[in-house]
Amino acid sequence: MLLSDGAEGSGGSVDDLGPTGVDPALEAEFDTVAAWTEAAVAELGDDHAIPAACRGSGSPADLGWLAEGLELRRGDRFLDAGSGLGGPTAWLLREYADRWDGPVVLAEPMPHAAAASHRLFGRPAVAAWSEHLPLRDDAVDAGWCLGVLDTTHDKRGLLSELHRVLRPGGRLGLLVLVQRRELSEPFPSNDFPSDVSLHRDLAETGFRVLDRRDSASLPGPPPEWTRRADAVGEVIARDHGDHPEHREARHQHEVLGRLMEAGEVVSVLLRVRAS
Ligand SMILES: C[S@@+](CC[C@H](N)C(=O)[O-])C[C@H]1O[C@@H](n2cnc3c(N)ncnc32)[C@H](O)[C@@H]1O
Image (cartoon, rainbow, N blue to C red; front, side):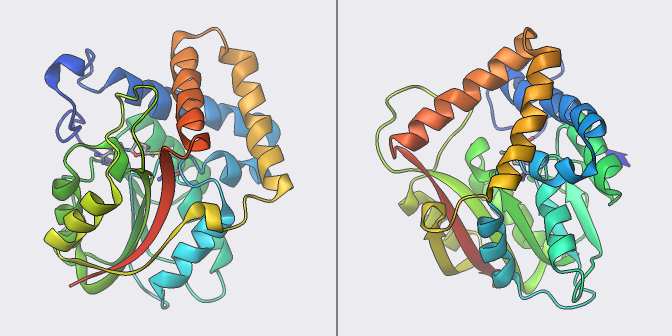
């Protein structure tokens, strides 16, 4: 597994960074919780892995809509940028098993999350920020980047890098949390784009938007999916509920939930093509 130093490209100011060089809120939410999630899945069973490891893309319907736009053909090389625990790509490999099975690469800056995704699903994972991917030009035919763009200030840097590694004409699926109204509570760990700035950034970095929709227009997750994801959350709360990083991650989750409930932030899906 390839590891990168991590601090580069995080987008936060140096003052915001902890001793490891990573934003502590990001590390709590995405790295520490990832390690706990892996342990909870080991206790509850493999059938809990995919729902628990989809951390920015709750609904299989969202994944399905994005996957259709990828037009995957056998042998297509695929990148999951900001892959977290790797649940979405594991879902894609399972659902498309009769017509496509990679090769895939998962790129995730939080080292525990990247390592855990490899152990959970057995696919190659690199610890890397998507602004600096350890891949050559035109390395992949398709990819997705789910719940990531709104966590970085350097959106054009990230999109330019995705454009560099995608072959011309390659398809990309995006799930982006977009700000539609003024926020009633601060959420400093994220930098939500507006619809306008998102489209401008995509156009400026060489992407053409083929289709888009709000996630809210698609069905939510089936009850069994939610039950398994919740069961993993309960095991984590049982074992780590008093841990400061658990409290931090729960706080982040609750505030984001309220912002989304109020319609101030919405989840937007985009099918785009690299020029
Ligand atoms: C909401 S989670 C989504 C994870 C995964 N894509 C999914 O849908 O399950 C956001 C992920 O983006 C990662 N991330 C944050 N900033 C990033 C960046 N600049 N480049 C790549 N990944 C980043 C975080 O570590 C985290 O794993």
